[in-house]
Amino acid sequence: MPDLGSLEEHLKVSDQMTWMVASGGTRTMNQTSGRFSVQGGKAPFRALLLYSDPTTLCGYYIGTPSHVGGNTWRMDIVLCDYDFSSLYEGQKKAFDRAAPPKYIDPDQVPGSGAVWCIDAFYLSDNGNFSQGVQQYGLWSREQSIGKERFCKSVDDLDQLMPQSSGKDIWAYVLLLDKNYRSIGYTILTA
Image (cartoon, rainbow, N blue to C red):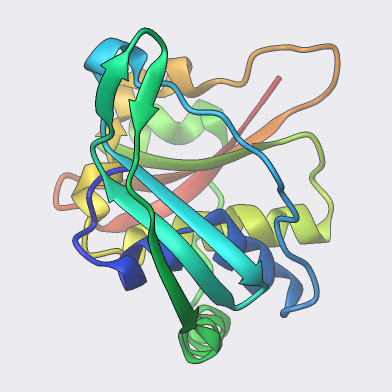
């Protein structure tokens, strides 16, 4: 996760917000544990968001964890009681009003004018809900004040290809021109 400057910006692109917007508020991430890797110091910035219910943040950490020794890292959690229902409602309305990007077949990407790309999720389902998760994930990153920080070179698209794991995996990728304007999206599958 890149540094987006504010708690609200991190919430907008969070997995929790994505699941809620895609489901119209009926589904949440429902994740009770997680892992992270600082990748040998190469990717030290982290955003950890803790929820007490679907639209209430009860704690967060945004920053660079301090290395305490061995495999131990310290994150000082800020406790809060932040109801972000209105932020969710605003994101849902804005996403519902947005025109979806056009689909570009992976074979057509080289001639599409794409210079940058933004990826979001790798999902093992491509049903309606998962498509909504993918589309909101891309849209929220494109709308983010940190949009350029999510961008990767389209030349590296093959590195974003999902790894075959014995089941189908779908990864939606937003394609942008040299000025970071959306030109469409493609779907990578394994």
